[in-house]
Image (cartoon, rainbow, N blue to C red; front, side):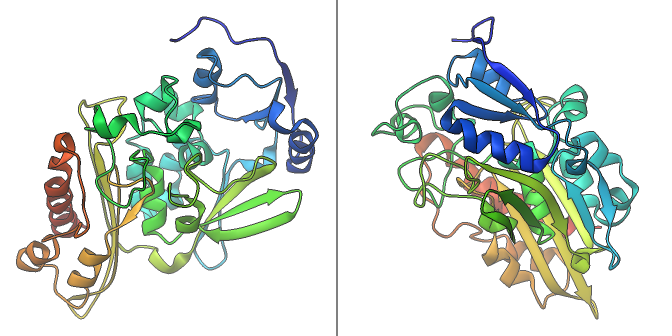
Length: 329
C-alpha cells in the first residue's frame, strides 16, 4: 500500500560517474541511485525499497545531452530527459522513430523529468510484483499472474515469470541497432542494447544486466539507419499516462523498390523487447505493398503461449506489423 513518506535516508549528490560508482561500492546493497525520480521514489514510498544512502546522479553533467557524431550517428547521455530527446533536431530530423516513441511516454510532466536511461532500465510493471507479492521476481516461488490477472503480461519467450517489458524508448533504439555504454568499478563496457536486457531464463530478479555498482552512461545510435523509413505505434487502454499493451517500432531500408533491410521491434509481448524476426525475414526483398505486408504479418509470434485473458495480443501483434509496414515513411 502506498505510504505518505519515504523512510529516513542519506542523500548524496554525485559529481562524477567515478564518485557514483565509488559510493555504490562503498555502501553496497544499502545504496540506490536516483536520476529522473519518476520510479524509484514510488518504490521507496511503498516501503518496497528502503536504501540508507541515495546516490543522486543528476549533478553529473557528462551524463546529459545529445551529440551528433562525425559519421552522422548520435551519442545520447543517459540523463537526457525524454522531452529533450523528442525535441532534438537530429533525433526528430533523422531518427524520427525515437522522437515518436519517447513522445508517447507517460505525460509531458513526466517526460520533462524522466530520462532516457531510466526509460530503458525501468523495472517490471507487474502489479503482483509491485504490490509486494512473494513472486519469482521478488525471490519467491510462484508467478501469481499465471493463475491470476495476466492481461498485460507476456505471451511469448517467458520462463516462470510472465512480466512484459514496458519501455517505449527501448523498441525504437533497438530498431536503430543502438548500443549502451556502462561504467563501473571494473571499467567501461559497451554492448548492443538487445544484450542489455535480461530475460527470466537468465536472471528472474532483474530486467537488465547492470551490476549494482555500474552506471549506464550513454546510448550510441549508429548512422546506419539515419533517414530510413520509420514507424512507431503504441496501443494503450487510455490516451495518456499509460504503458503499452503492445507497441511497435519499425525501421526499413529500401533499394530498387524493394526492402533491403528491416527492423521490427515490439514490447508488451515478452519479458524483453522482442525482435519480430519472422516478419523481418518475410518482408526483406519484397516491395512495400499491402500484399507483402499481409504475408509478413502472418504468424508474427510462432511460439506464442498466451494466457486466456491476453490471447488478443497475438492477433494484435500481427495487425501492428501490417500497419507498420504499410505506414513507414
